[in-house]
Length: 449
Image (tube, rainbow, N blue to C red; front, side, top):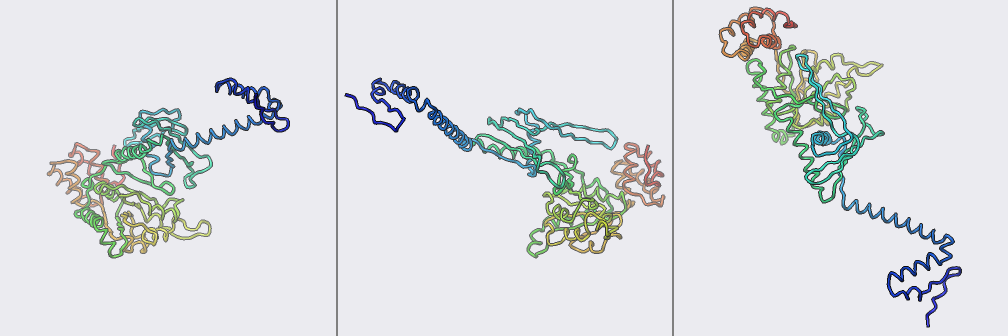
C-alpha cells in the first residue's frame, strides 16, 4: 500500500514520493526528483520554471559578487598616495630604480644641465607612467596603479591631479611602511652632503635642479670679522628657542646683506646654509603671479631646516604705487610682505635673509626690528680680502701676494671679489700671469679670453 502524495495547487502536478524513494540511493532519489520537476512538470515546461531558474541564477550571481567583494575586502588592502603628498615623488623615484617590477607604461623624466663652460649633460630616467604595474617586494606581490585625473587639476600650475594606489594581501600590509621608509631613505641619501635649492611652484616648494655640493664657509672671503659675526648671531638664535618662547617673543630672525654687486652676498648665504646643514628657499618677490595669499602660504610652509632667501628685495617695490588699471604694480603688495614677515599669520622658527644693492631704496617700514634684526654691509674687496683670496688660489706665494695687493691698491678703483675670482680662475696655476693681468681689473665686465 502506498501513500498518495498530497494534491498541489491547481495546474501543478503532484510529486510521486514512491518513485523518488524506491531507487534506494541518494543519487537515484535526486535523479527521480529532477525528472519529475523538470521533465514531467508541465508548469516548468510552459516557462514558469525557466523564470524561477533565471531568478535563482540572478540571486546566485549577486551572492557570488557580494561574497567575492567581501572576500576582497578581507584579504586585500590598498594604499593611496596622492600627488600632493611629499612621498609621491619619493615613491616614483624609488620604483623607477626598483629592479623587480613589471611595467608596460613608462614616463620619462629628463634632467638637463648646462655647465658654465657651455657643455650639456642630459640624463633620462624612466618612471612608471599612468597604468598598472606589478612589483615583488620582499616576497610579496603588489599591484601598482597610477591614475591621472582628466577633470581634477591644480589651478595654480595646471598639472592634473594624480594618485598611485598600492594593492597587496592584508597579511603583507606592514610592507607599505617599510617601502615608504626605503623610498624616503633613497631620496634623502641623494641629498646628503649637499644643499637643496627650493623654489616656489604654485602653493608649494619644490627642489630646483640637482642638489648642490655644500660650499665650505672659508671659500667665501669677506672682510675681517663679518662672516664670524653673522655665523655667531645665527647660532645664538638657533640655540635659544626656549628663551624666545618663555618671553613671548616670535621665534624668527631677519638679516639684510647689502652692498655692491659681486661682493659675495648670495655666495656667503649658500656657504652659511652648507655650514649649518640647511637648505635654501628662494622666493622672487617680483614674480607677476605672486599674490599676498600665496606669499603668506609659502612663507608659513617653508621646508624644515631651510633658510628663506629674498634676493634684490628693493627691486620688487622700488616703484610701489597703485594704478587704476592693474592695482599694485608688483605681483605682491608691500603690506602683504610686511604681514608675512611679522604679522599675525607669520611663521615661527624661521631664518630670513634679504639682499639688496640699494638699501636706500628700501621703505623704512621694512627696516623695523622684527623684520630685519641684523644688517650687514658687504662691500668691494679690501686689502685684507685681496690678500686672503690670492693666498687661497696660490698657496705659498707670499712675495707675489704682497706685490699683487700693492698694485691692486694702486689702481685706486673699487674691485669686487667676483672680479678677483675671475682673474684667478683664468690663471689657475700661474700667479705671475695673474699679476701681469692686474690692469684688467679696471674694467668691471672684462671677459677673459
